[in-house]
Length: 338
Ligand SMILES: CC(C)(COP(=O)(O)OP(=O)(O)OC[C@H]1O[C@@H](n2cnc3c(N)ncnc32)[C@H](O)[C@@H]1OP(=O)(O)O)[C@@H](O)C(=O)NCCC(=O)NCCS
Image 1 (cartoon, rainbow, N blue to C red):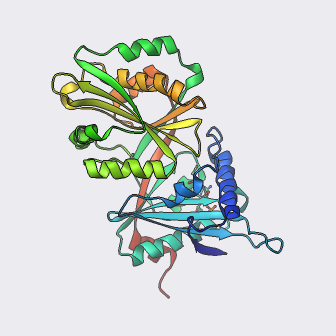
Image 2: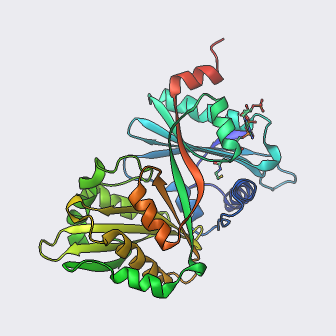
Image 3: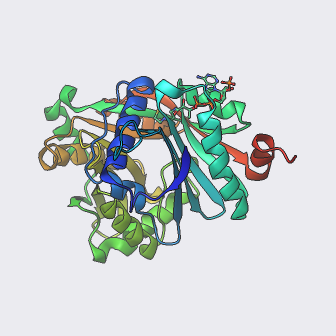
């Protein structure tokens, strides 16, 4: 049975069952990824940025005993933002190739269509069944990034400490657990806005104005994801010359996510990228003792950043693709008018 589902009011048994299915999916498709925990999972699924909506459905098995909750065998949610619906679908490995995935996509697509949205986007992990699945539904590949993973147990910390200080004179590097302080939000957002057009093609969502940035930090906190920031400030002008963001999610605190790393145009060539990333890892080592890996996503064309990541010890892991489809075409393909 498939039904619309609200994580805010879902029973704890349903949340636990969804977690079990998510971990079965990870074990089947991404066995090197750490399993997720239940900590803040409900909030992770329920909380969104102001102005955005996430709508979810679950596929549930028949309860096996009275008072029992049927096992959650699949889930789909779509995040409605701007003019696009961002889709995520999960089907338990034990019930794959029975048409459930297609059925879940159809539920979400119909709603996205009714709400008047134009297109649906989805992140698809290379070398997993999702590639064949979305291609069979007519989704096309927009671009590909590489996910790389850094194993902190293999890091040479002395060398890293040296990298952290290898920055030209005239810059001050600062660490902010929890996010940038209020008085820096504007300069921070300015640095992000400046490179928006220059470094096109990265997948991570970004916030370019102070209000949006504040909302995005609040949303992260509400979803149980702790942001850490390292900034390089140009001493003379007070400008934010570079920044790097890492998020440690309560759902998988042994593996952190690298978000944006930005060096403003005028401040390139001074060793900022390497120094701020190295400083971040040194800080995380004491701030997050459970942490053993950091993952990052880069456009394959972003050679400068890939080079620095390789020096830090990141190893390429998977292709991470963005696919999209026209909603009307998808609905008509899956649900032809009779
Ligand atoms: C992708 C996924 C949703 C597919 O679910 P499913 O219920 O098995 O899909 P369906 O049975 O509806 O398949 C529909 C069509 O997709 C295509 N398809 C599905 N799996 C495929 C595969 N492994 N290889 C090639 N084509 C595939 C087929 O054309 C299939 O039709 P057919 O079975 O009649 O040939 C499921 O494998 C899944 O949950 N993957 C994990 C997704 C994810 O986001 N993971 C994140 C962490 S990796």
